Image 1 (cartoon, rainbow, N blue to C red):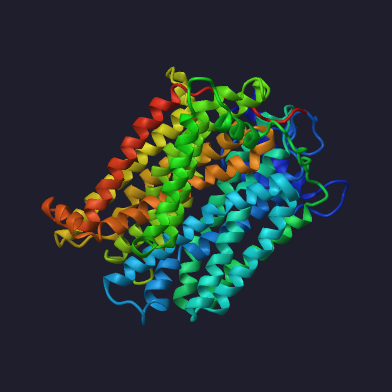
Image 2: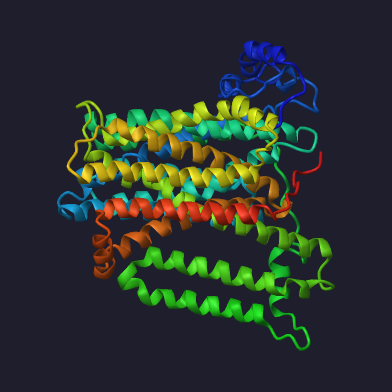
Length: 568
């Protein structure tokens, strides 16, 4: 994390007056809706000097429009996590109650949640493409936000109708996914070379505010479901999403809107097409053959729709296409030289290297998103106070994030640097994936105790939540800024979409594992281990994370970082 060269006293003085300065707006006009942003920066432990305030030296100030974006994000994240964190509980106790019985209801609820998450993190591809090619980030965010609001309205109005409720989930997946790659990228656009060192601070504050919204959603919305019913429990997040859209719209006259790039004959798609189709005498076209095989395999996936379901088949097809076409392009990329400028060819090479990094992160998200399904289901079988619900344990995650970000920035990272070990972005992400594996060893140990008939209090889940959250801070908070900084200028929205696609693929691994354990041969092998199905899967995902961390660390040692912030 970049830190200012000023002394610590300047940061303290800035904190005392920052909120007032920011809340006054510009030229005595309308107050900023997120005027408390200074307190966010101070509470994250991130240095804030007077040069960060509006009206300070232009080369070092915090852009005035940032509070609108962060205020929007806080409300939007409350709305999303509020509905997501009660989804499994609502499905089990209400919507699926009359349709599916026993353990099958829990499995169906888990399948619906992870299918929904796949959609949420798949639609960033659409949002990024529309923003980069047609409408720009601001317009795309605004219109998808309105779709998002409509989805929340459906959940509140149709909590007793399976079809109406699922339409709402689909609209939320489309809206949340459509804006997901763009808000962070749009915030990055507000910075240039003169103040890019502030971007690292703001991206951490951005991630901190995400968890600020998530914390209160995780604490309050399960109580709303319990005491007020589903209509209010899903309606309150909808109201917050409307507020988020309004806050974003209020900042419209202050935003930096990077113009859409003109159609580039040497763009990513053009270079890929040339690389795959170009002929080299005596060398054949192995890359093209790999791409064709991946297309055929992707089409073959749809023959398994009856056994696996359409969501899994679509995701498998997408993974095969990305791997085959990307690998084929890499194989024949040198053939594009001479037809396209060297800078364009190297840009494609750099982007493909980033996508390999992204692919190696996917196992972490297969672990992380199961805290809203597998861990909630485990928590329902544990002892707890009468006023508490298993869903509320998820509040630990954002609470710990808000504590760990300042701890890492002010204590851990400086301590590691003094010890001679620089915590670079890729090193942090490697460690984060490994900590995810440790979390699942801990939760697996809890499951073994429960399987043995020992009553376990839900407080035992604090340890795995702490380990998983530490891993999340190292992976996700770092990954957002990494994805933006490594993206070529003309493809920032799309590259951020690929970053979020890592969660789609992570949830695919979860769905595939759920399908596998329904196979009699697999269940027989699990029984031979002496572990329950739940415990076996927990240790399986832990091993999956450790293997991913090893592969990620080995690849990261060869990765060359680039700087793609726009010029001042």
